Image (tube, rainbow, N blue to C red):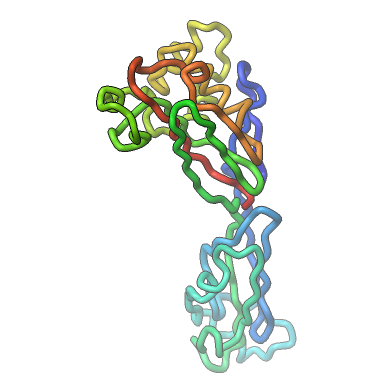
Length: 257
């Protein structure tokens, strides 16, 4: 699946998924086979499928006038979506036996509008403090959020004293899409003061160390790679709450699976 590169000055190689998708349309005359196809790393999403006739010109070659006069004979169908959605390629016959006959005596055609979208799967990993987080994808990783701290008493609590798991308000990042927002926040910033001001506004990040750790995890460590290894430690992410045993939560998307 295609990825695009932002031109943020401070992180000029931050990779974020392109929101692009390719729209396509196929028209298949009655009795023939419609073939829908997407590029590598993309899958089909059917927007609409209409079987019938809506004008006199389409699929009219060598047809008598009586078979193309009725232009109010179209019928929407979800059969194409049922057969093709999520597939890289799909074939379906434009016949009355598949779609029914909306208008007897009229020569019909199948119109399908569809979009080729990036094939993606969401994933989540939770890693206890001191251990190593491993992110893995078939093609490329895109980090949606990275949170280091503690938000509940249950996660990573085994064999830990109560005093180390009581503070559940110890993570600064909310469950926002940090990396794309981070790219927006850093766009065009030239000084550390401006950088912190922008990131505090967009992400409530006040610590330069916290910000730099997110830049690392979003840019240099994981995004655009197939495999990413990060150690969940205070030395890497900073110390959001001394005395509390923390964990790293990473939510990411695998594109091009």
